[in-house]
Amino acid sequence: MTRGESFETLNHFFVRTFNSILAWEERSLRAAGLANLSVKELHTLEAAHEMCKKGLNTMSQIAARMGISVGALTTAVNVLVRKGYLARGGDEKDRRVVTIRPTPAGLDALAVHEEFHRRMIGGIMDALGDAELAALTASVATLDGFFQNLIKEG
Image (cartoon, rainbow, N blue to C red; front, side):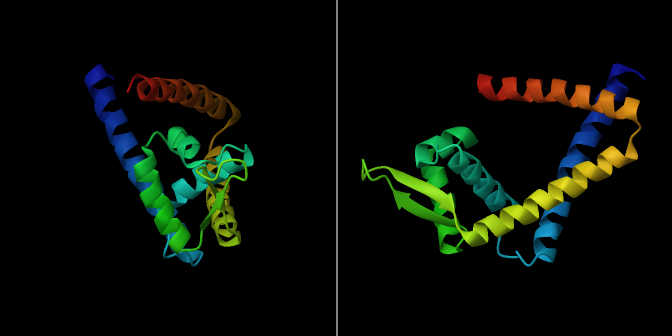
């Protein structure tokens, strides 16, 4: 296969796979009765929960983790608070600090999302032999490093 053919194959794969995963993720939310939650909102909820577990759940810390501005996060959080998936809190030591945490409904939505990921990754792993799985895992680690460097470089 030529480099040009490889380019076309990889480009087609990444675009189609990204879109397929998003569509499947949307369907899994709908099937679980979470029709009022978008995938983008779910990923914001997921980031807030990750940071909350680490005790790093201020608006600025979550925004930095997501690579977005505090203003953009505020807009997203306002929607998720209104929908009942996130709650705001204050810091007892500094009332200017706003913390974010998932509500019980938010934790339920995250459990649905986690199950989606378990099914997706489990299905991929079941479809591959040991050597193919090892090769894919190594390749994905390389790709992850590439994309993380792109993000750091801005």
